[in-house]
Length: 484
Ligand code: NAD
Figure 1 (cartoon, protein in one colour):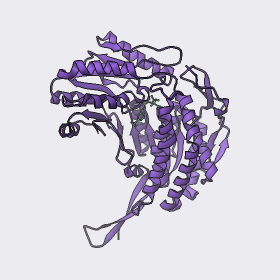
Figure 2 (tube, rainbow, N blue to C red):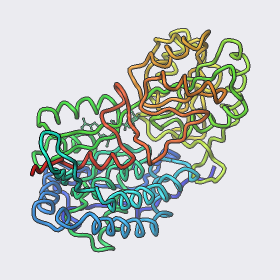
Figure 3 (cartoon, rainbow, N blue to C red):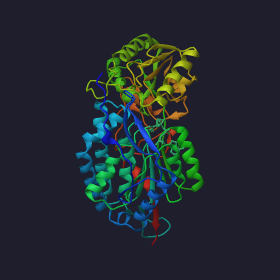
Figure 4 (cartoon, rainbow, N blue to C red):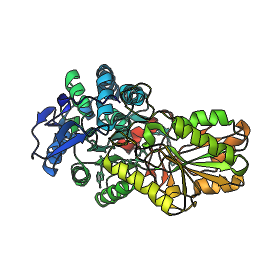
């Protein structure tokens, strides 16, 4: 296995606030460990409450007195396009940094870090150019004439993101926030604090007004300081349901709006009418992408009893066929898990499933040579209400569950405290009816292909509010009615 080279140039020792590189208040550091070989990838400041305060003040100043919220939406759209152009130039480097930080295979980090963030910026630039973006008129109902509805920038937005798709989850917040006229403080995850600096450099390179984008890396304490800071007006969060619940309670106490994109335990329902070749081509990525570390993966597969033996066989064959290895290799489909924390969590859940009577048909073990590699794993004979069938594993572990009737399949799919995603595989005239009955924020027919132009988010413990689509801009706007 060729290992990702350690590059000391990835290290950073500054926070970014008010358009300047500032020394952090303390010498505390985040050390990014390569999940491939445990070598040091780089370091970044572990931001303190004092650093957060400096960044929020810079964002506050830029919002209260700077040009950003005062320029027209079309002018901001031009800035977003310039930022997209600059990030596009950096796309190759950004995806390399992400592969080093989190071990994401290059075949994923190139599109997810090198292309999608740029697509997001350009998409919201175009949304900002719509004539009704900031102001629209509606006819009055109580009286005559029209009233004006204004959508004004909300203020300073705190953007807290996880490590699993760091650039994509960030730009799904950053692009609509900037388009709306907000200024932002970004807190990346401690596992991936380095790639985000590309935005700082890009914003300097194009001469964006200072204080519009501010960055403080750090862990949970840094995030908590940001969420609790009285200078923030909006929290946009992607991460675990546990953290989301805590953040929502703090935001509730402060009465600031919060958008939460949280975990999932999505079900793929395979109907008897399914084309299994096509279904398994889809499930190769829909169940295992990003080494199982994606919120919307089909981590439960529901098989009709009549097809159970064949689906079982195909699933085991798929798990054995996935190419696990060096994330810098073009052929690699699954890299290592991101960290010891996630690795221990995944192996602990599989071991507890085994102890509870489930069968680990394939996988269920750590892979050599070193790092956090874990074999693609299929679990059967698990009770529907067991931990492995209910909780998010966030690793390459799929639980196969049989069902007797379509009603039972729908019931099992909905028997979850999550409600993020799902997929139904079957004849075209059957799948839509089943999809309509499943209570999730999104669902795919014969595949799972999220699209930026449609809202994305979760029911139940999977979140609050929606991202994607023009609607996401409303997360960063206040609405004002002007009556006349
Ligand atoms: P996590 O919740 O531990 O951390 C996510 C981010 O939140 C990190 O930046 C972390 O430092 C910060 N954080 C943690 N606790 C915090 C707190 N109390 N206050 C403020 N900030 C806090 O999540 P993780 O385990 O690192 O990431 C994986 C999780 O993210 C999974 O549950 C996954 O499903 C979820 N996720 C959801 C989506 C979605 O769109 N629904 C997308 C990607 C990941």
